[in-house]
Amino acid sequence: MLFRQIPVLAISIPGMHQTPFPQHPTQGALVNRHIRRIFITAIAAAASISLAACGGSSSSSASSSGTKTVTIRVQSESSIAAEPLYLGVEHGFFKAEGLDVKIVDLPDVSSAIAATQSGNLELAFDTTIGVLQSARQGVKLTMVAPSDGINPKAADAPLDQQRNYTSVGVYTSKGSGITDMKGLKNATIAVPQLKAQPDATITSVLHEAGVDTKGIKWLSLGFVPALTALKSNQVDAAFLASPFTLQADQAGLKRVMNPSAVFFPKGSATSAWVASQSWAKKNPDTVKRFQRAIAKSAQYANDHIDEAKAHVIKRTGSKVDPKDMPHSYWPSTIDKGQLTQVDQKLVDIGFFPKPINTSTLITPPAAGIQ
Image 1 (tube, rainbow, N blue to C red):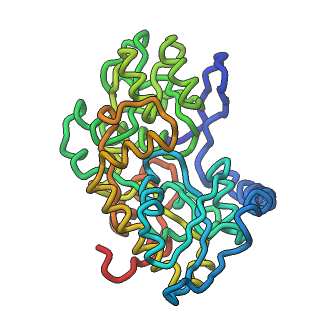
Image 2: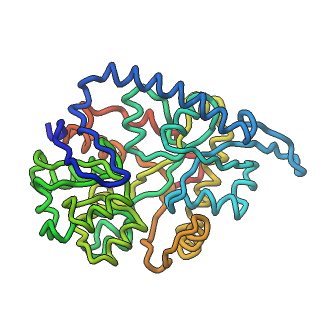
Image 3: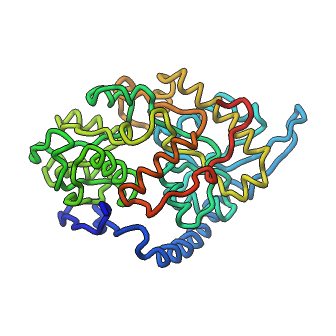
């Protein structure tokens, strides 16, 4: 299998987390599921405390117009991927659907997913690959609506122009001498998390290009230390996201791959707003309201991309020029065929042992959403 336990480079960089690359997903599965159950229980308890300030479970009240207003707690993230949620709240799209959205900050995706399972959170942000992985670990999630996706223009653009439509890329250090993705064979590559979307997409793209990946050394590094390691030639390559990609450009580093733009089907969703299957089943009306509001928000963001860029810069306090940011894209639906294609690609490289029925992970969109 292409995914096997491989050596990890031992270098001293602040923020570095060294973890051997996991072996085939089926090995140690029972132990992993047991650990995850314990972890979710512990995180859920912590999440219930941090969410207490946002009130109890989702609640409802009558508005002045007589429409029942439902309060929902939604965990989000700071990147532009989740921008439609913020724009939708600001422009009243959720209010028009009778939804009072309370945006909740949690330390990481694991905490958010745990909170949805314990009933302490209604919706959370997660990657589509993360949902496929959770499903295999027995976590019952459903993707209620898409968040961001692959800009359709990216698939047909040459490498040097794909950066205009994707916020992530693989850069190489000057000392590595690597000038294209074929040079990544036997390279040491830094990714923010092992056995996740970055290394999965990189491996798949290299696999399809005929590049042998067995000799790659994967190193778990956050974006800040990864960029430092690239500049000091301590790693051969690194997976970076905006604004760190912009800093890499300024440092004269070579961008050799845009893995997400190549890996994911044209225009497909790469992240989603997820809920526990039990909550979605018990609250179909609230789900449809959210779907309509987020779809309208996504369309607004697509139609007003400059406003979306400026808004996320202001919201996060980033020191970035909007014109340097890529043109993000937010799809209106999650296509089952595309999700199945992604799942099969991950099976082909040994990331997952066998395919699953992806239709069970998607909540059908409300009427009128296309």
